[in-house]
Image 1: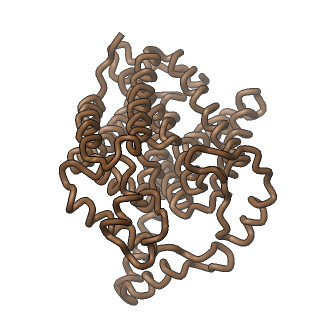
Image 2 (image 1 turned 180 degrees about the horizontal axis):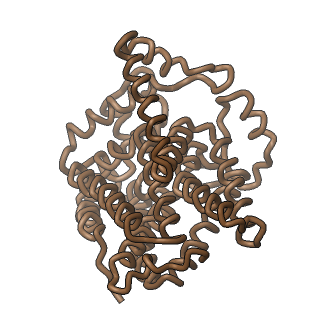
Length: 376
């Protein structure tokens, strides 16, 4: 059984750019893992959409998705190559056992920034569902206890990654969910924005740039690498300007960028990707691929908003949680990325599949989500 989704045409455009990417790449064998990862992710998306055709299937898929997040959190604790940033958190992470090594391309363990980015697809959802369990006084049930333990595990792992992008994304995602639940928090968000704009207006951008480059309280949070990202973004923009319609080929920026655009501070460093999700897609699949990627984000946000307006009960809480995940992941993607086709990217496609399936259920004539049992 086939179902149409609002993401069909952006996905088709991505697929159209894949052979173009293979034609452009300097080595098909180098790009092939990313291409296969992208194709697998799209297949997982449609498998999820087809599987979830009623409310019961949606509930089962949600439980499976939360179990996947728990597995990611647990794997991150024992399989991450922790970086030394915050002296306090580093003492905790270095004391953890490292039982899982030898990942393809990461023999010493998973990259903590990537682990943090992947967990953003789970943690906001877990917190909003946990809050619902608390309000309904169901925390002491088996499902409630399991959700609480899972949420603590994934949140703890995300904090230990010391990924500032993931921290900021989580904070903004939780704030947006809070504003949706209680409009009074909007005043807090507006006040913070006014203070930030006023700071720049009075003292200029110099102190802010110095803060980003040197880090805030480096003895607690570690030194910032803002200057490194500025150089990588500059190189990425040069690459997009030279390969606007075809891209460089999936996954090739880490090699081609250092050869074509050597920068003194990063020429010998394997920066892996563009440290910006949108720049990375443009480098991989050209500007047409970037248009498709932006459309996926926009359509996903539209589907979540539709579900929030039409759903009731736990599906509405789930939709709000996915909204927080999208917001947090978007913020994270501005300074880092889990690239399309990366080994950690499959949960993103599962999340999009659940969002699309929920949107389809919200539009059924029976109004399945509008009549969902409030205590389900």
